[in-house]
Amino acid sequence: MPTPHLEKPEGWLYHLSHTDLDGYGAQYMVQQAGIRTKFFNADYHDIPTVLAQIFDEIDAAREPATVLITDLNLTMDQANWMLRRRRKLKLPVAIQLLDHHATGAECAEKFDWYYLDTERCATRLTFEAVSDFYQDDQQRELMGKRANFVDVGDRWLKDSDDFRRSIFLIGLIMQDDQLAPPLTDLKRSYRFHLIEGFFKLLESGATLEDIERSVYDLRKEFLKGRVRKRIYNDSELPLNDKFHMLSAEVLDPASIPMLEIDGYKGGVFFNWPYDVWRGVIMELMENQKKMDFAIGVRSNGKLSLRANPGVDIGQIAAKYFSGGGHPGAAGGELNESRLRDLNHAIQVIKNQIEAHSETHSEG
Image (cartoon, rainbow, N blue to C red; front, side, top):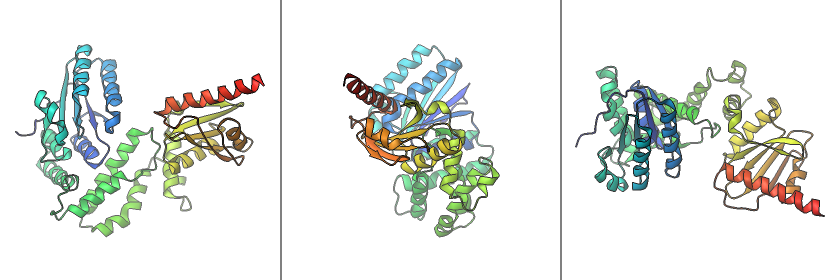
């Protein structure tokens, strides 16, 4: 059975995909086709949350829409939830899922919108689904070759001459981008930039060693026009720090919940990569003066705390979080070691501060 062709969406196309090369590669195929699209990405445990977000946005827009899901297989419960939610909208919403994971077989047998093909990766399936939207045969041929290239690494086709090159691109896309976790659209744009830049280098005749040497320049090129020229051209400023500065500049303040502890204002950051957290909070605290201190929380309840001069964060860590350290840098832990998400972490922090205050007020 051939891959179903995507019909021209009446309104927005809402495209949900995975967070690896094949997931972003599928979205890259759509982006290059010029379709008016809102992109979303999810790991498997995030699928319910992101599906709810998509249907909330469709409901708010109150216009026809198309939902495209690639490189993710749904459970039967998730598929049925989506259909129930569509019925409640009372709007024309088309659904198409393109997947290549055999674990989706049960849903594929039941739903006509669930297309399963284990012989082609999601990027290839998506290319075929949107091929009518490319501007001409030349672009269509180019995108087809790039989709086949992704297929080699994603399906581990080791006999292909492109295998080493393809898994290099997989690794490049999966490397930490040094951008703040809430910046999902920017992180996706960065990966589109890497994919496009990689293919241009490869198609110009570059070897893998040439491309590896070019990765720094490719990453830096993404910052052009996004950070101030002074920062972009500063040869004494590490590239990762420039990404951290960009993150701090564009972060929505609402994405960082704030707490007041002992009269000081601090931000709470859940499960951020340490280096990104360190770089971004330096900019937010020291240069932008948006907070007095910052708390980095791991899902196991371990805390890293940093503060501006004038705030003794070591004392705060000792007082409330069974920790300690220096006035500007300290560590601690929460009473719970299995934190579900940011909201859970904040509640546990508040409870711990409250419990300490009650105990000492009684004394």
